[in-house]
Image 1 (cartoon, rainbow, N blue to C red):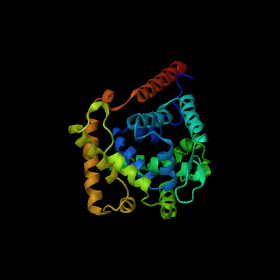
Image 2 (cartoon, rainbow, N blue to C red):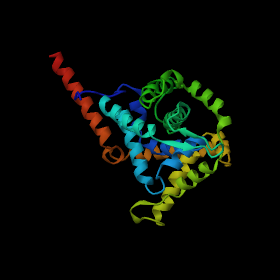
Image 3 (spheres, rainbow, N blue to C red):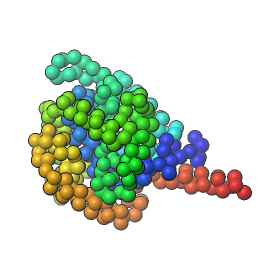
Image 4 (cartoon, helix red, strand yellow):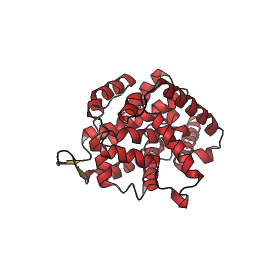
Length: 281
């Protein structure tokens, strides 16, 4: 690995600017709620994952994967993606309606997971007040084609702009519904087993607020599928809340809000700057 390798995106990318926002913790939950509405996707998780017994470990591994792809070196991103592709390649699930088995790495399923994830990240950043323009949003989606390629998708089949993502959602919404798997996932996200013996402590109430905000960030049509109000007043309340949280989190030191993958990326960027200065002398 070259010490100055900035990875797939680099410091001038919209991706680095968006993912530097710690408020994206809530975007990850939003994505999980949204992904669960695609029956084959949620069944792939329910039938193959020990998420009930290892909820926090799974969440941490997912966060580490996203961090490696966004901020890791090129080699680190490719290794992380190769591990995930290797796991997915071995897994199948059974369609509860037809009884037929299917691979969980089918392109339609991978595309849904990718789009809901990146749309959740950039839309949450936008609503939280991250200084990005409409052109920046389109750039973000286009940059994320590199992440789509890593998980095995043909970038030409992946929406690469805000308009393309909205059109994709409109096309796929007839396939989405509140299956038993989606109901189970939503209940689990709202009331998961708490780590470190916290159980029914104030941490439980705090988590209910976190999961509630993640759910509130969903688009209105998704909340309606979950049989919850899709009101404009809800959108306004959630937007004001997430903006206030962004300001509060922004007052904390980086050592609290950002992990070692981010810190290592900053060191690589600094090393690249030093190399450039040395080369110029």
